[in-house]
Image (tube, rainbow, N blue to C red; front, side, top):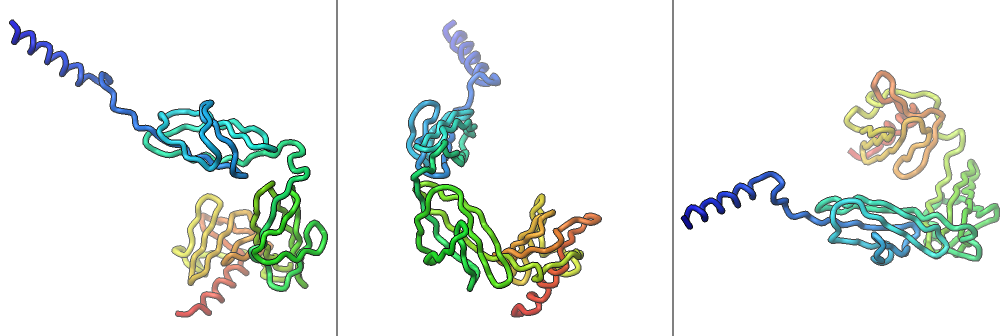
Length: 259
């Protein structure tokens, strides 16, 4: 009788263990990596203080969690994140300044690079910052003009309190330089294997040159420098068409490249 009872109990236990959902697998925890701009915001997760951004919070149950981000002079932000099982979710938040937060506050900027020989005007006044050295400025919006004998380019930027912002200030070519209202098939000049298209972004790599352009945008980045054209990249009959002047410049540079 005892043997039969033992056999029956074992059979029940095995059947229970094999039943779907009867014994769930161990849940694998996840993590969230929190960053803010500016950095240094105090972070609460589900009501518990976890440190200042950037901060990694690990060993979290998968699912939705609530972040509260606070920094003096900036609006409190509430952010929901979904933590994956066994993974890390990235949470980056650009904080919004509170009213009058920039009053009497200061930050700094560093000019990393500019057009050789160009003159700079900061908020309309002559500006001669030392290259690669932080220059203190009142926090808030500013504009800088890059002036050359042939062009004037204005850039807008914002100085954040207690932070250093890097600037790269290149003048755009004048209206008589590198401009064309004509587009031509890219395949005829660089070949279909020299470019990729992802959504609106176009990337051309050929003979050591890198061009980044966008459909509908007349400005392109050519080896790091901005060049503007009278026409924008477009697609005609499923084929990529680029400004003719850009394609001619690429062809000329390709012919000059070492073999």
